[in-house]
Image 1: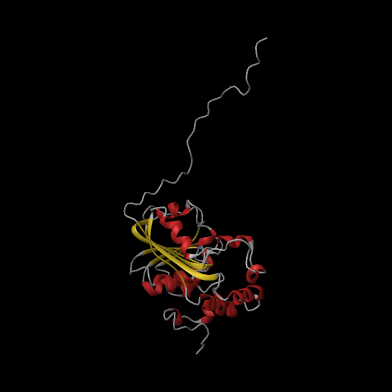
Image 2: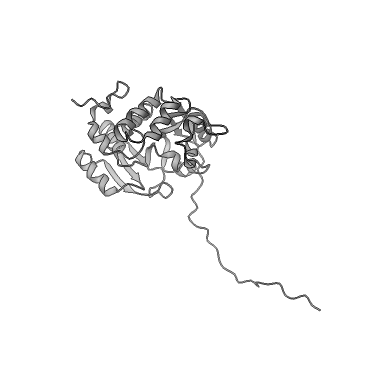
Length: 271
């Protein structure tokens, strides 16, 4: 038996072959571990409609379909929906996992279509601004869940980047935030009630274990995570439930106007 990536922390994920997980790698975290960690608090039930937003190569979507018997819309912008369909078919869940190529800010769904939205190691790259939760929540039924899990911080970095992270850190990584930051960012909107916001205990060790399997030559990241040892870098998860009284603004697609010609320049002053 191949014992790679086995963990008592993730009994559901242990059923899946490490070769399959590694071949479907689409980012810096194990999508099954993060999905299992997040969904332990979401209350998914068979037959629910779930949006897997930023699904990568659809491993998390397949996991959701198999483990919870939910219908999953596997949405990603960067990875091929056609390739994901092949993976979905091979997993035997074509009847309930549907791959879609779409941008997170231009989703082709009806209002209140989903019972839940999950985003695994993807949300910080498109969802940190003050308007995005308002946009996303319209696709979720009142009382529906919105949950995210992925790379983040134990606490916000104030001032200069720590020396332990400096060689690895890039400007686009400022999208990563702590669980407490996400809690405040969502709660203030009064769109969702935040039910959970925390960091994975010893998450940095799982980060390293995954990197050792999928990118052992990625020494800059590996050494940074080793040196940090969980001081700043972590896996975080946040889960909220759309309020029954949530006020979600309408999406402005265009503003109708009528052109009325007007004089371009002021008339010359009379002499």
